[in-house]
Length: 313
Image (tube, rainbow, N blue to C red):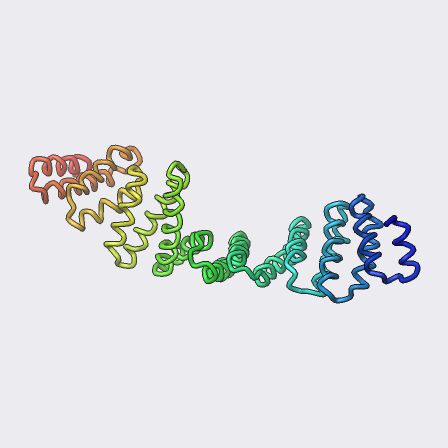
């Protein structure tokens, strides 16, 4: 029908929703934003507190935000949508974006938390809580960050994005058992990703370092066999990473795997001699001497003991 016909319908019934809806749609399609907004608002008011009204107020907010760059009117539209349905996620997310642009930290935080609380899909809700955790980490509020990341883990027990920062925080707090549990999640998730893309050098480095941390934390918890396995996997990914070489070599000696330990300690000297202090080098020579002694390679043991003494008499 021509636009005039819809206006005639409205003259007969100013609250005629089909006519309001048709005119709002026509004006919106033609880019006549002021008239579109007028029709949409009249339709929303006629719709009352219904789901249709919620969507109409949200549409008005988007038109004001995206087309007219009128953020105050956009905020009003989103707020009206939430007045009717406080759990309407599109409006919550839109308001969150407006608050972030405006630098309104307090309102942004409220919207961020509300998004996490109102999201229904478990995976999406987990991601929302991860974002809350990142926000609080940025504010250096570790207690709140931990709470948010733990909520994400409850929803998705395999979430690397939540477990990785949790592991870092728990390590810094020396909460070794919880750190180990989080690193189990991280290393399992990263290993699965790496198995699908072994050409990803950055992923390989990240997995290596997380395996090293798992080894370190497992040692702290007295899980030597698990620590040795973690160090071994890290060593397979990067046979030159110094923290791995040190942890792996130490546990190999304790496990009496002397030939493997000897190769690891030699690798430290080959790749990292310039990074070590003289006392650290003397310690490595002494360790190599002890390894050769246990292997009954007495000449080589003596040679390494003498090298250690030459550095530190």
